[in-house]
Length: 164
Image 1 (cartoon, rainbow, N blue to C red):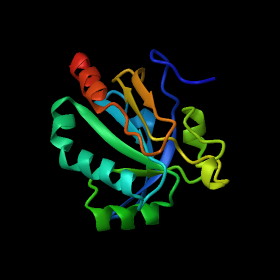
Image 2 (image 1 turned 120 degrees about the vertical axis):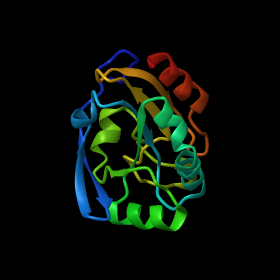
Image 3 (image 1 turned 30 degrees about the vertical axis):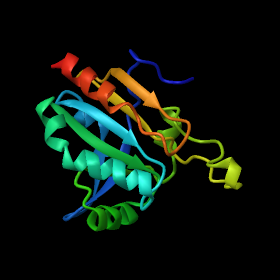
Image 4 (image 1 turned 60 degrees about the vertical axis):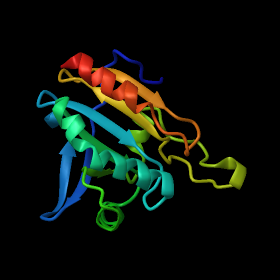
């Protein structure tokens, strides 16, 4: 069943790679500290994903001013994500959903990624955005079916503003 606005956000624990090494990030540990924005992206080192996360990194102060912590999530390994972040200047935490369990839990996993190109990579995350409030409730979501379409970032910011 797909997640709806008003639902409790599914908890997860994912790996991120930091200068200190791999670390676990558990969503429930972040709840209550700030509002949370989860940005699911299909794949590291691809054009639209890089542009999206570089733009968010460059404007991260806007999200911080709205009392939000932003996480990028993809099915890439934490080591590939770290290389991507370093090469591209992505500064927000990138979480590795290597087994695609979180994409499935949030209802954003493709059954077949880019079927028109005959790619059979199931589980790849659809480009999407979720805003989770300090109580752990989903307050906004935007799931894109086409990987080149960006989520509604004006809607993300408006939702964060309404939570302030």
